[in-house]
Image (cartoon, rainbow, N blue to C red; front, side, top):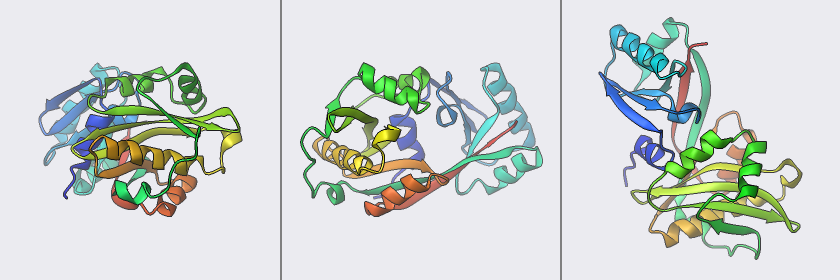
Length: 236
């Protein structure tokens, strides 16, 4: 199955608004981070197109930031010449849901919740995922769920999963420092897979920065494969 990964990201982690300006798709992030604020190219781009996109992003009160995917090498070179710096290269991992539904989840390890609980918001906040990013989760339409992880009878982590077009994508997976290296990330992904299966998804996916060695190691250990990548360029 051919997957439109940019569309999966946009639907499961949506910006507050979208606008097409020439060959660019602009996103209004409302403080929700790079993924919901970066402009992306829909075709070939001229210097005048970049100028117009920059003006529009500043008018939104946002930084000048672009998302670069494979095929955007010409735009990448144009932005480099303008002094834009690389930000957060990421990997997109995926695997069939069935790869992670072969092992039952231990009791009281992962709870599913349709709305973010106060403790989940607290855990996210400790990891730098504040109200503006929680608002992104609340904007997502279609099947979605929150994950609340427990370890030693204590809240230990949280995450968010949403689906589109047969693909479930995990976002905002955060484990509290005192509960890391206990296998909770793996259980979270397996719980997401069970939920995805029950909600009609055939593929489980997740995005992480290339610099996050621990997360990349976890997803590889779970048998997930890199199916895409992108990076940002930001003018600082």
